[in-house]
Length: 310
Image 1 (cartoon, rainbow, N blue to C red):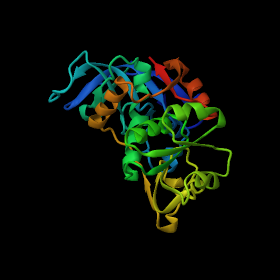
Image 2: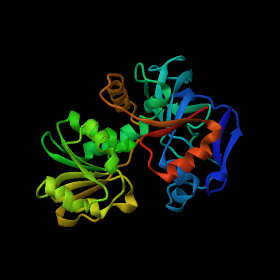
Image 3: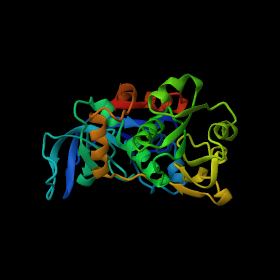
Image 4: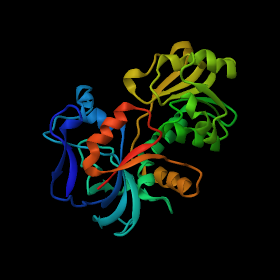
């Protein structure tokens, strides 16, 4: 099969499409024939060596890329009863040393897999697992109840947009921070208030929510400037540990760490199939255009996932 590989760290030029034997499903695993695989910022951090420098990636002669996948089960290992060959599924690869989803086949533990959302194209389904589970877990970590307030930075992005929708379902009021051109988009996703990201953040938010919001999910990695919009004893959820601010004013600062939760992914996929949750795709590219995808993602400004198709 063909797969995206990195043998040395660097820019997009180090990305290779290599021919390797297709993996076999072991006990408790399924093999998925990949129809679509999203490109995420963690792929860029893997490729350029940032994860290795941070001690999050063990030394290896080759590293495989790709977390999100949508496709069809074509082989099941011993002990698997939830899935059968032919099932349309989505899944998440959350172990960096394992084979990546940016390939023609990927093997996943069956607990990392969920039925694909009904009636949704594979490219759009592939945009759900990492962003959806990140948004969902971040919202859970805030501990917010209906009627409370949440600040979402990067609200027009993949994680931020899903956060707005999930928060709205729970009755949580949201302050969305994004580019001025994105106001209509984020309001359509359920934002209660909108703040352009060019404004002084804490001042703008506190004008809308006197005293500060009950919680922040910092999807855009703004850091302490977003924390200043938080009320005393509120909760700040960071998505990137090195940029988590200190817990000033008796606040609680937690770092969200996503994992391949197939049970919750099944519930999120059902929401997508019902039209209540909307993962977005910026563009679809063939697998051999992975370098182009990395360049475009690094350039920013995307309003959805870039998705590769083998």
